[in-house]
Length: 478
Image (cartoon, helix red, strand yellow):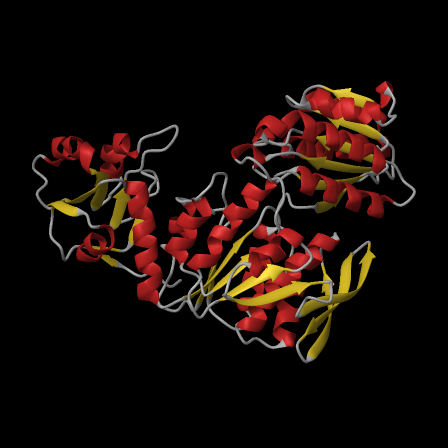
């Protein structure tokens, strides 16, 4: 395995504007870590202050585990001096803020590597689009991609630190839950290609309106290189408006006449979704191992990046058809007694809730659709109304029963009742209680969608159902 690009102490000083408290400018580090438990030889430990822990409290632990250098906040230099006694060989640098320094180091690393960057943001679909894009670019280039959802001001730099001398492209996901966060992350990336997947209500609690969310996503635009390209979802009017306000070169994807890269002849089947990818001068049939028309749009965004990178239609097709949904992102499971479970527990917002219910309705056919729903977080003052709207939509989507958990369960129930669902078809309570109720009430052929925000850990319901339903099936066989 190729090692990351090494760091000289003088490079770190140049990138961060830090000062050397101890050691020599020629010291060399092979890795950078913020976790004192994950230290290998020749590692620089960066002590960051988070919401729950202060890395400066773990400097001695990092030292015991073999850290050969430290990057600390200047105000914490006394912590280092107390440890330094008798260890003149220790290297330590001080900066005003180590989290800011992480971003400075990441930006420096991108520039010195010469890697091309595709940055992806949007209210939903960005992790899936990132995975699809990496799969496509991987067919022609040595590609680094954000692992999981390492998409904030700490996760993004940790991803960039993995760049090795052979990487040609980096596919980086940019997340946000407050204004100016995309601007900060995009400033680190300075992307060659920027992608905006859509504008929705995710994290609306930190903004005055959906227009505020659109403005925050648009922060990406001015950070794209002057000769770079902005890739936009032509099916989303708010995204299209972002394109109308910039002089950047645009590439629009979608299903309408305004799209340069387009999906046609979309067909939904049990095994996935099929469509014809219309590239400039070329048409290719695509079979995605995924469900939902939103997956087609994610695929078009990824195909747009592949096209701009100069890849052939055959390689774009190979990358898309290799893609498998990320764990917890609409994974289809079937228990031994014929109950279908859709694990969509990775996260949730009002738009993704509605999309998931729509897919459930199309997949279940004439069978029953059961919804196990947890709270959608970060909606602020809109929490009550948006959870009520989910209850209304649940009934409209054809759900037979609701199993609700979380602080807003009663609001979802209120919405469903207002739409005519009977009290006896709505359960509210704990996740464990929801599992027990489902075990009593499910029959072979039922389709169960489990969804909620990350903080609800709704995957516990999926795990409990699979285990208990499998046991029940085995007991009937024996």
